[in-house]
Image 1 (cartoon, rainbow, N blue to C red):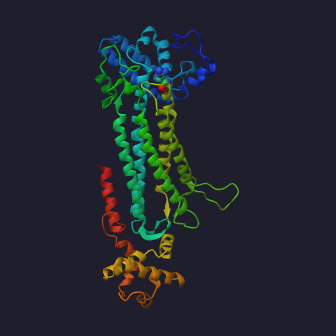
Image 2: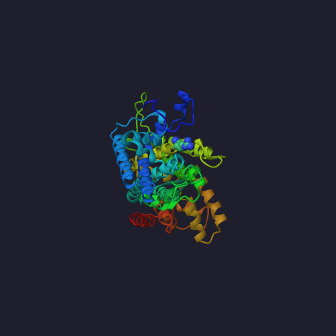
Image 3: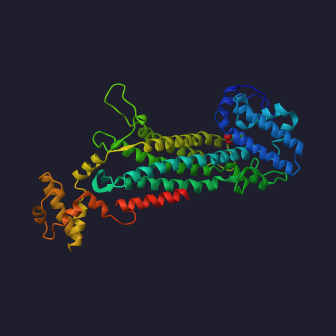
Length: 462
Ligand code: ARG
């Protein structure tokens, strides 16, 4: 990157910019990432200018040819970015002028960097939505595959991280699947508001040229046009909204991570994460650390940080454009990168995760997880729920004292707590009986889980 080059925008200023200020105020170090969108926006703008006779067709063609050369230079890695030209927009414009001469100076007619940058960010974000959706889909498919394989596998379900009731592992995976469905809905909803064209707003008030914003929108594939020029150049709420979606998704992944970390510990030993997603310790030879879930859990923090960064950046900003907004890019880019990386690694990791049904089963047997089933059984025999609750509480206390699960108590022992108990009780005290009995929409019964998976597969295809 070079540091001095004749500036495009400084005739009004008589003194040269302080060299540190030049570096301090520049954004080209990070906004060069927008070059494709910037060039696409300029090509559409030049095409529109020619259509309303502000440029001749020849001028338009020269500009487009120059921009194409620049595109190749940047993609080929031989474009010289300059700090003195401040940002991606002026770097490309300066190069255009040096390539095609005087006519290059006409490109900026009827626009400003303010509507230009707002357009570039929206285009960039719009381009990123499909790759993000694809990664969410990969993870959703991976979850469906595990859920299907483990539809009958039983583990203890927890509340307060204490054994509560048996659930099927398939059902547990489908809970994560549901969260991702809501995440993708939030993303598509936000995408509608990203898809609006700011170009034409110029610096803030619009332009005196007879521009055709509908044409520019059509050329760039925008569904809508920003309806107010002041709002168009200053608003970044679409980026905040995107980051909110991302923060919620990362929050979901952090919860999933927490479970994977707990489940892969020696104390639980419910799952085995592939070695490819773990690392060893430099000092403790026995260690296999769940680095991927830990890192994703940690990265949730930076995405929350980016959200607060953008909210705070926007807070109290008067209309219209302020230089503060230059700071919107790094948090946005960072969130996109973090999201894409986390989703990608998660989909790969879940696809090869090994489940340990036997350990899950043993854990479910240990925690009196069928106590509610016994209470429901008594209710079906005519006992009021509160009384049944007490009977089961006493049975569990007895079981703890004698180190026996409810299913291991004899009929006689059970009957000492309630005369309503008969030998059909053992059906409800088994883990299989317990999960199979939750046979309704949203319940944990394997049959319901299979139905949920089938429904999900159908809607993913649609
Ligand atoms: N680099 C600037 C940004 O990212 C472009 C817009 C500059 N506009 C201005 N009036 N200085 O926001």
